[in-house]
Length: 236
Image (tube, rainbow, N blue to C red; front, side, top):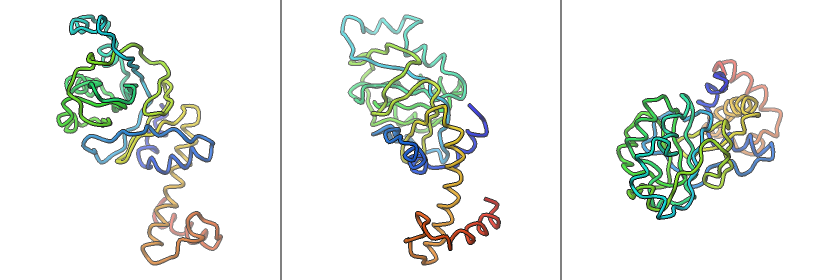
């Protein structure tokens, strides 16, 4: 992805990006129900590389399938590009784990920018201590083979009710995760940076006792000169 865009997205919130996308008519881009494991104090940003699960059929999913070097779950870990975010469609259920600490550690060592599942991780406490950002719904110990079969790599998926296409830009913060369509990511990042600057200005004004009406959203032009002076003083 555009490295300037990556840098911009590292400094904006998912909430601000929601507003940016809402203005463009996109209302369902947040991956619902996922939470960070051990917040790292920085955003997760990267293009999506996807893995899709389907309901497991018992005759297809004995433990022996892990001996297959082409098993999609293992291949996903070994082929997710450096700097990408592995996004897993686990059917919004965590009855069985999407992956565990060994696989997620391998993904981190290969340079993954993060991992997201709308299911759960086993060894969640260990994953929370890794340097790489990870998001899930809740801890889940049973192997994925219990009720999920990894079936397809890097194709469009649904994750937590959000549509995710390979290459879409994934951003996660301390709250949740959002999906930005790849073709508008650069423009969205720039708009979010501008919005964030104004929001930071607003926070200072509110803490100083300024009423919110007319200030946020800005409907009174009287605040514009003051904001521009604030930006100059704060190099924003």
